Amino acid sequence: MALHRLLGIDLGVPDPSTLDGFYQEIGFTGGDHHWGPEGVPGQIVVEEAPYRQLLEMRLACESDEDLAVIAKNLEGIGVASESREGKLHLADPVNKWRVVVEPCEVADISVQPQREINRPGERNRLGKRPGVMVEPALRPPRRLGHVVVGTNDILATHKLYTEGLGFRISDIVGGLGFFTRCSPDHHNLLMTPAPVPYLNHYALEHDDIDAVCAAATRYLGAHEGTQIAGPGRHQIGGNMFWYLRDPSGTFFEYFADMDRIVDEEAWAIREDWPMDDSWSLWGEKNQPEVFFTPDDMEELIAGWNKYHG
Image (cartoon, rainbow, N blue to C red):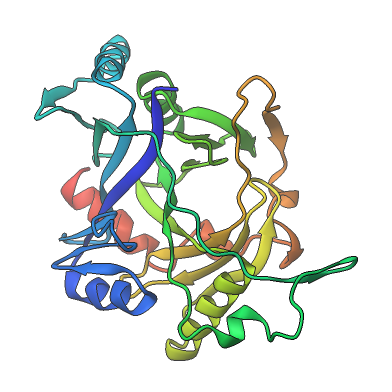
């Protein structure tokens, strides 16, 4: 496995200060437009841009040899790349955001404390109130887990990220929605068709269902009109979810308990997920239409056409 982790993203927005306050509010650490979980204050970098967009995706591979293989694979599909300062840099020729690949140690985040819970026949929380009630502060997001992008050339985008960069397909929905991974997570990048390239949402992992729901309800209480969808549990990926809108207009997802794929040969890719029966096992049955046509889609189309069209 050459690629093994999504390291981070750069977001472009007209006013970066609005996201600085947002990331601090939800529990990320950092400053000066660099934000992330404790110890990693640069998973999300915010830059000024004329309209909201994804500017860069950063990926981890295992070694310098992997960089050479990826560069050769990119050359084989006609995509130029450049090696400098120990990293591989390329410009996505379809979607116009940057991609950076660098060798990093294979690792996961540190183990987080588990809350004691009572199950039928397994009673672990005795004489105590639930952990979410007695902890002094809500638990923060632990990491950036995945991004979902729209693209106006789904087949070329699929080719770049699978044949060129080495993402693996986990599942396919509607024939043209590709759930792909660069780590053992079920997905780190979902590619879907769209009128123009844009960032649909980014996802932040929480410890458990309590952390997801507590963080989402607190955010909703302070920011009316930011609800998008949830809570629920996705059929594809298996993760618990709750979607909200950040101050720039981009959707963000709180998630927990995603499928992990550690045996490539044992995982059965399902290629026939229907669009009308793939959203959630419980909660809202159907995916809200706003996912396919965000409120600011006309602005995104105008911005793309002005600066990239």
